[in-house]
Image (cartoon, rainbow, N blue to C red; front, side, top):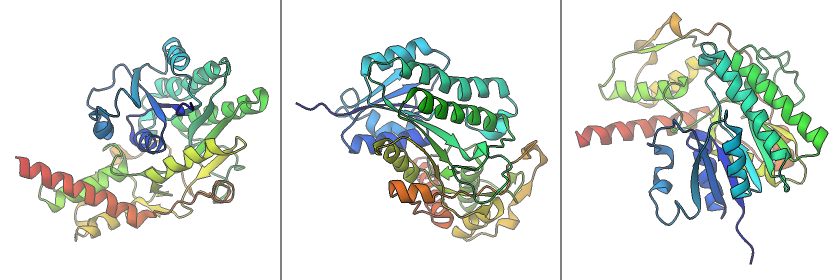
Amino acid sequence: MNLPPSAIITGITGQDGSYLCELLLDKGYIVHGIVRRSSSLDRPRLLSHYNDPDIYGKRLFLHYADLTDPTSIRRIIAQTAPIEFYHLAGQSHVGLSFEIPESTCDLTAMGTLRIMEILRDQPNNPRFLHASSREIFGTPTVSPQDETTPQNPNSPYGCAKSFATQMVRVYRDSHGLFFCNAICYNHESPRRAENFVTRKITLAAARIKLGLQSKLMLGSIDSARDWGYAKEYAEAMWRMLQHDQPDDYVLATGTSYTVREFAEAAFSHVGLDWKEYIELDQRFIRPADAESLLGDASKAQRVLGWTARTKMHELVRIMVDYDMDRLRQSKERT
């Protein structure tokens, strides 16, 4: 009798982790999620599965552990014997990393190294995916960027991710392990936290349209980003661990838009002129900001057969419609 495959996801309660969890469950996996001990018991992104008695406790399990606690992580890995390990957790807010650089580096850089050391010691080494970031390129020397572009981070978060990304390559090359980097460009969804600029914009557009908010304060609106749909990026992560050989892949749409254009699309979708509602606030300007970030995902298309299908304008519609529906339902309940 063949047992179903088992996978571990760190960061399972986040945007990417929840989409990946759904994908793996649909493919018949037993999914084990690692959540922080301080993590809220309210897990809205996993709610449908968490409350389903046919899934939670049978095909989906959550385990408490911190990235600073290798003993607990080692115990979970020994108990669950995963064939795949998806490492998506860490302090992932770039702007916040300037305020808490030490904890960002401890969780994002050293947390990844701790996990890889544990996996290296396993009798059957799981395939490992590290969710890297386009922030490793910082201020890039070329555009677009691909897997061979020199790393040049300009934020504490980018430096931490660069360290982790390089260590994944070291472990793959030196120890012969199936370790991969998913170098993800900005990927958003209705599940994005509200302190990220994309969700901040779509939520504000919906709230202003419904008369629940009057203004939106933003920092730089001229920064350009390559925005894709997080659900599709989760699929690419899974494909990376199904391939014959471990490698690194840039995941991106290949198109870039400014924050200004993103905001214009969001407000236009609800029939509003963004210029009447958005004000600039110097408090939201980062000490250093990445520029000219545009990803070349041709390798992922060629090797994995993966392409980012949802581009910025469609992504904006998905997010704004979700926020409008959620706010309307909330108003009806009150």
